[in-house]
Image (cartoon, one colour):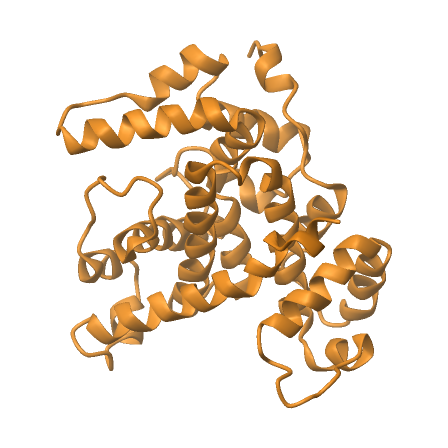
Length: 291
């Protein structure tokens, strides 16, 4: 595949983010090495502590210390926060553009939805969260590299949905950047040395997924559709699937959520959880977090 300079010049994810992704799923006893790796990144470590405090989980402590926070936070939560901050930092320069900010909200909602759907699919929760956050990494990278140009493309796409006219965004990505976001994702996954479990996720969702990744692919497919249906999509005019229909396509999800009142409680519950999670990371956009 010939890769144009517009794609080759895309900045990579931070090495610590790639290291964390390649360490998922976590194993018993990973916490000391995980903590050591994160503390070697002082700026990231400070933000992890800020987000952990902002999450409200230490409200019972007047002045929580780094040590007390680490003692009370699980390794999975520590890795999750670190990966999320890394993705936010990767997008930081683009987030002044409204469309990019909407996209950030969308991928964070996808991550939450995927984690929520992980138990019935028998998928590791951190694995599902990270896959949901990075499932669209080709588009994420294009937005990071060309925020205003991609924002114009999203505005046009949304307008075409409103007008109920067909529109091939892959064709226009190819024209603007030399590769569409699926091909970009495939190339980036190889160049950035992303983990094997993420490779079937970042391109087109495939029905040919291996037995080992089929449940993860199904979970991410359902989780991303759920995020859009809950109102967190970056293309607001795009059609939304019925939430019950989405869950019925994921084995075990309906029985797992069977106590919910005809999905309504589930929708409100998920919107509330996603809104709270967005508030956790809002601190990263504060002026002091940028220094």
